[in-house]
Image 1: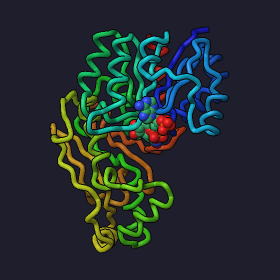
Image 2: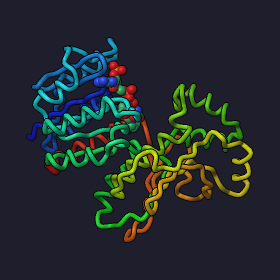
Image 3: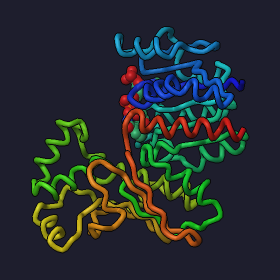
Length: 332
Ligand SMILES: NC(=O)c1ccc[n+]([C@@H]2O[C@H](COP(=O)([O-])OP(=O)(O)OC[C@H]3O[C@@H](n4cnc5c(N)ncnc54)[C@H](OP(=O)(O)O)[C@@H]3O)[C@@H](O)[C@H]2O)c1
């Protein structure tokens, strides 16, 4: 039995999803010869450490009852640096201004000889190549499937399943909130403001929706795609971004009459990065509805491959993280 020790830095929706997945898959993993143990968990108020393996069920219960996993005062840096383990799962909030606290956590993890898996877009949008090189220089893995498309395995598909292909271009719908708003506006002929309010009430849109509806979140995901798949060194200023706030029900109605839908499409092609509302034929593979995400990858050998699925959610995002954990275990 191979013991694999991990820490979970950030214990919100995604961190707790990872913990639940580990609990529910424990027997399945043991059949595969893997004993996956969590030796450190941190949230903003404290942490729990147990080098023999934390009782994950109790940690989840404590978080639910007390609002914090804290059972000690060690900070994330002390866990990452001082506790002996293999993989840091970095799932703190995305910060697109300076990437913190995730950026320092990831830098320290590589310096301390730990592999990094993350769903945190901020550090990758700002310092992708630096982090990739830090991992390579130290002979470690840097896996970030969950940063783009939640459960949709875009990087795995391109880097593993489509290995040997040259990717000519990628188009995608990578923000579930915008897709939900556009779908509802189109299907119910409702104005933007009303649908946004509905999305906020349903918890699909944030109280401050700017990051989603202005296309910023989509642009950040496109930067990660461009840097990871096309080997670019792009940042936010390299993306031409238009959001969905100016779209009217009349424009959607006109599109509908001509058998089109309007979607917020991200595109990376020939070094150009664009996020903008676009007309998509109703039967086109990109025309997914609701909060779904989709990525359509054009390659030289395989042609066009399109995958679609849930772009967010605690367990869905944790699915990508678990897959990254197993990738590292099987390849190291
Ligand atoms: N939710 C999704 O479906 C989804 C999908 C894809 C990617 N992501 C990304 O994944 C990351 C996590 O998302 P989430 O939804 O789990 O966020 P969340 O629910 O806000 O959880 C963030 C966690 O990080 C903790 N935290 C904040 N500052 C910290 C610090 N300095 N040190 C240690 N922990 C700290 C928070 O502590 P407290 O609990 O004490 O507040 C919380 O436990 C984000 O970067 C997000 O963009 C999320």
